[in-house]
Length: 172
Image 1 (cartoon, rainbow, N blue to C red):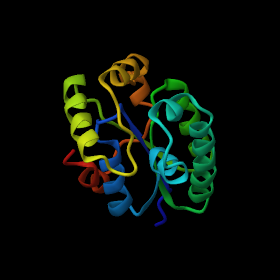
Image 2: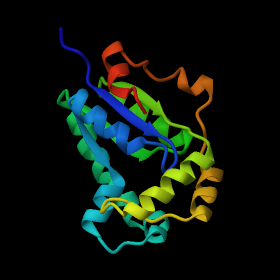
Image 3: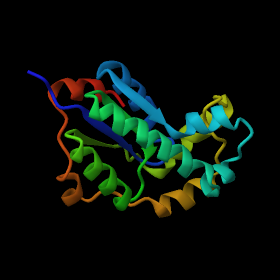
């Protein structure tokens, strides 16, 4: 039996564990992982957090990543979009487009308290991985104010995790 491909959307603020989960899904669900920050840092190593947030580069990278994701789904491959998808409109757009390609769509919501996010961000700032941005507490608070948490009604619009996916998504 052929299974429909799955689009996994990691949803949450910086420090919530999105990329960790995306990497796990990439391995365990045999999915193509598309992480916006990784591409931004690889293409423009000197890009600042502010430029990544407000400049024209992130929308361009995400548009290109979506084209690759859509083609991959159409070919039957699983895909993980690791962008955060903070707005309901963005989640609705991606879900509708992926369903139009015959894909299941799973929303992976990661929503720890702000203090835990800040603790993780501080640690990441010290470690300074090449594919991450340095963030301030002010950045986090501004972003937390912009994050549209999915409601139970919205969550019901997405496909549930299958038992094999729950094992892949567990532990975060």
